[in-house]
Structure formats: structure tokens, C-alpha cells
Length: 178
Image 1 (tube, rainbow, N blue to C red):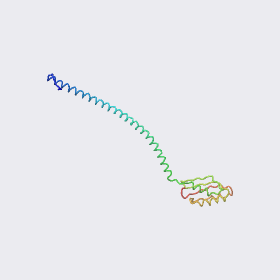
Image 2: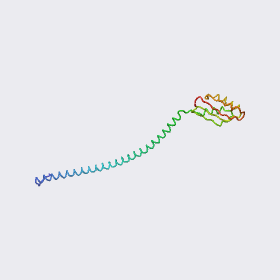
Image 3: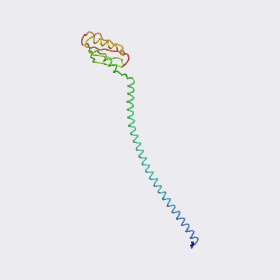
């Protein structure tokens, strides 16, 4: 079978129908492109909204972190100040306990101490107490002379007049501060 194209339209009508077909084609393409652009615009607006919410959340978090970090910074400054003070106080630290133990080990059994004062500024040591006899006090004097870090000391002669229950007070000068 043969396909026959019979066209009974006039050439002007034919031309106007072509324009209408082209117009309808362009109209369809324009509608599709406007629809696609609208979908893209909606997607962009929704993504902008999501990004704006995330940015607001991050900003709020940054503000909270800054508030919290300033508190932590103040606490760290206090701790650093305490550490610095400890380091400064420990620079001139020397153990005193071994020297006190040395004195305690050299005490005769009958000598009782009532005061043991150490003055690091003047490099002096004050020992006061009671000895049962004068010989015990002289024994304490001999024992204290054996200590290498004691420079000088004397027993006041007035304290040696008593024979029993001798109260004494020794002012001892130290070679270097303990």
C-alpha cells in the first residue's frame, strides 16, 4: 500500500499550522524547562535551609566552647600558679628530719627535750629541756660536739650549778642551714 499525502489546505493555512506546531513545541519545551528550574530552585532553597541550621548549630557550639574554655583556662591558670609556687618553695628545700633524728639519737636517755626551735634566717637552733643529772647534760654536750653541721654552742655556767633535774637551754649556731 501506498501512503498518500493529500493536503487540501491552502499554503497560507499550511504556513500558519506550521507556526502553531512550532509554537506548541516551544511551549512544551519551555514548560519542561520551567518545571526543572522550579525543582532545582526548591532543592537549592531546602539545602540552603539545612546549611543555615547546621551553621547556627555550629555557631552555638562554638559559643558554648568559648564559654567553657574560658572557665577551664581560669582553672588551669590557678593550677599553674599553685605549681609555680610549689616549685619556688621547693628550690631551697633541704630535709631537716634527718638532722633532727641525728640529735634525737645522740640524746642520753635521761635527757628530756621541751623545745626544739630552728631559725633558718639566723642559722640558729634552740634546744631546751631537762637533764636528770649534770653529768647527763655534759654527756649531751659531748654528743652534740660530734655533729658536723653544728658550728658552736656553749652551756651557760649557771645551768651547771645544779646537780639534779638540770633545766638547760642551748643556743646552737649552725654551719649551714639545714
